Every structure is written in C-alpha cells, then in structure tokens.
Image 1 (tube, helix red, strand yellow):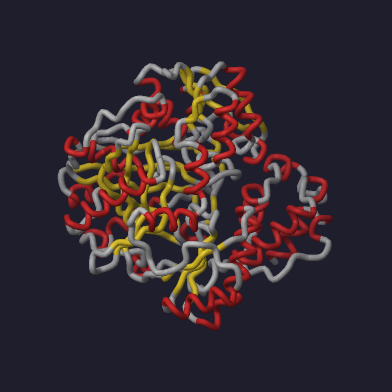
Image 2: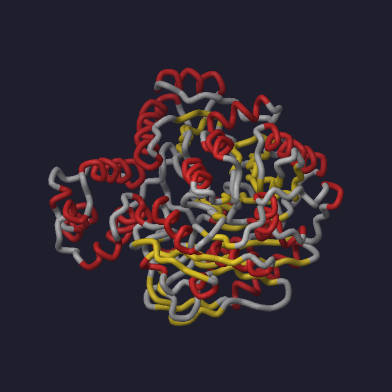
Length: 535
C-alpha cells in the first residue's frame, strides 16, 4: 500500500518532525490539535488540520474515537503515532486496522508483548539477550519479592510491568525497606498505568544507559544503526543524549547491536525500535526493555548515520523491503542532543507554562533544532514540558561538545515567568566527566544538583499549587481550561469523581509525600484543596 495522506496522532515537536519528512517524500499530512494547541507550528505546516477536543489529553490526544473520526473526515489513509500518547497502545493499532487505516508501527500483538516489561524480559531471555538477575514474571507478594531480593542481593529495583517513560520504578537498598516499597509501587503502578503488577531486578549502580536503534521490515530483515548514550538523567528522565556512545569497546558495541537485531526479529518486530541496556564498568551489558516506537532522541542517530528514521518507518509500514544492509551503515562523527524543557531548575524543575515573547533558536553549521515553538506561542500546562531539542554534530566528540555549548549560549527563550532547563543542560555538557565521556547515570550526583531525598521510593517532593494543578490535569485528566476558569467550583463538579479521587490520593502519597487527602477533597475548590495540601 502506498500512503497518500498521513494523520499525525501527536503534538509538539514530534508532530512537526513527522510532517517535514512527509512533505519531503510527497505524502499529504493531517494535523490534529486540542484547544490548547491551536497555534502550534504543525497546525500551520500540515495540509489539513482537525480539532479533536479540549486540552485534557484524555479527551483529545488519548481519545481514540476523536482521532479515528479526524482520519475519516480528512480522508487520511494512515496514522503515525509519534511517541507518547497512543504510540504503544495495541488497542489503538487494532482499531486503526479495523478502520482500514495503516498504522505506522509494529503489529498490535507485538506491541502488546513488548508493552509488558516482564513478558519482554522472558522473550528476550529466550532470544539469548543478557538480563540483570531478577524475575521474568510479575512478583505476586511482598514476601516473594523479599525472598528473591535476598537471593540476588541488594540494591534492587521494582518496576511496573506496564511502566514507561522513566516512571513506576522504585530503588530499594535493604530488606527492611522492601515490603513497604512493594506495596507503594504496586499502588502507584495501578493508579498511573492501570496495572499494579511489578517485577524485580538487581539495581546496577554507576552504570551507563546505552540504547541501540534497530530497523526491521516484514520480510525478516533487520539492521542496527549504532547506539546512543542516554546516561545523563534526572529521576530516570533523559536530559542529554549522544551518538555514538563514547568510550565503548568496539566488541561490546558490535555485540549489543547484533543482539538487538536478533531480539527484535525474534518477536516479529517491524519498524523503528530501540533496545535499552545498562552497561557496567567491565563492558558487560544487560537488557532493560525494548521500546516499540520512535524515541525522543532519534535525531542524534540520524545525524551520525544520515538515515531519516521517520521515512524508514513509513516505508516499512507500506510494505517496502529495507534498502539498507548492515554493511552500508556507517557512523560518521559525533552528535549530541539537549532537551530544552519549560521548567525551572531552581524551583525543583517546576513547569513554567506561559506565552513566549521571544524565541530565537540557535543556528550555524551542523546545528539542528526540533521544536514546535515560535514567538507568541503559548506553552500549555496540560502536557509534558518539552519545548525544543537542540542537536549538534561535528567530526569529533570534543567539537560536538563545543558546538553544543555555543548553541545553548545562543538560544534565547523569554516570556513572563518562563524558565527553561537551558542553563542546567549547559552545565552538564561542560562538566569534566561529561567532556571526558566518563559519565554514568549518577552524573547529577557529582554535580550536587539533586535535592536530598530517599531513593527507596519514588522521589518525595514538596507539593505546590502549580504541581497540584499539573497532576489534576495531566495525570487525573481534568480539563485545564475549565479548572483555570472555575477555581471556585467544587472539584467533583469538574470531573473529580470517586475513581479519580482514589487515583489522585495514590499519586500524591507515593510521589509527593502527602499522607492522605482530606475526607471532603472532592467537594473542595481547587484553591481550597491547594491551601490544605500546600500550606
């Protein structure tokens, strides 16, 4: 099948990224947008656009009926899910197939298997990929978890079976802490992902987080397009990525790549996917998970290989054979990506929504900026805070670092009460350990930028009204626009029903240290609830 018109079921910079490739290869585009994204760049760029609902993601970008209807009215014959939202939802892929819409991604049954992290561990173990000691099936009880942890040794990490995006994980350093951590992690997983099952594996300290980009077609062909180092993270969220991973033994690099392709083909994967590994100081690598979608950090791979991964996704989805062989893939130079989030590093990385009065992205040779922002753009408080990705390439890693430092210095983002992570990632890139390519996942501890906290459970932070609003809108699903306009209306009248109230309570208890909600929480207004919880 040849795609004529593709609907981009996403928003932000990735929607713009997909639209650009479509224009280059002659495919028409349909953008979908919520009420909060009317002035987003992709709406202007696409050939057609369809409004799919209010700002709340559950009623727009996560609404399968709204997206399917947008495809119908626009005449689209294919859907690209981007990353996040519905990109790894097998039910969405099945609905697309039932509606004769080509889904740009793997088959639903493959997505379902890979979406279950415990199942992924079992399947990849059967394919011969190395795993950290742990379970390949969910752990049923705290007692069972304690026994297993005692066998493999502490520290261990509990992970939600349905987790992703760096969430649903708890580090446990002692036997005494495990029962409480198990109970809380299960509760948080059930509230956030709708699935309370967890599994357990040894926690590897001082490791590197390295992932391998794979590309597979439906004819059993697969290649790997090098690797990426994603070790620079804050609370399991990636901040800076690069390709290729520095100071990695070539034998390890090749073994990881070959193992990644073998694992992907073993489960019938098609499209662009990523195998994520932990690598210890001896060069041994262990699979964490496989992501069955395009990664946020894919531009660094494109910069060093010259391969347009979105185009390859589309061609594979159309049924084309891979035109690339492993021998033809050559890595040239070094590329670094910094994520620019609308967050204030000096205020516990709180989101800073608002209107951009000035947005001047950097330019210059071999400098790429993927963004949906522009002068006058309103950063909505309803979604993740990623504003732009700054990517630099150079023949050597040292030059790429210097170019990134220059690019970050050149970037200008201004607006009323808007702050970004630009100065923070600039410090990361300038850190001696990063410059030497010797950084691991604990780099930020060396920078002394993290607040003191317990690592036994998800980070405990001080709750503030901005964070509370973000939780109510992004996690619980209240309509942000309505909430802002009706701050003196009882929350149950705004959609905080009994189920949502339980979800809110678990999120606040497990992730923000709030012991319990007031008994009358859903009858309070937002301002009243914020006053009681935030002081």
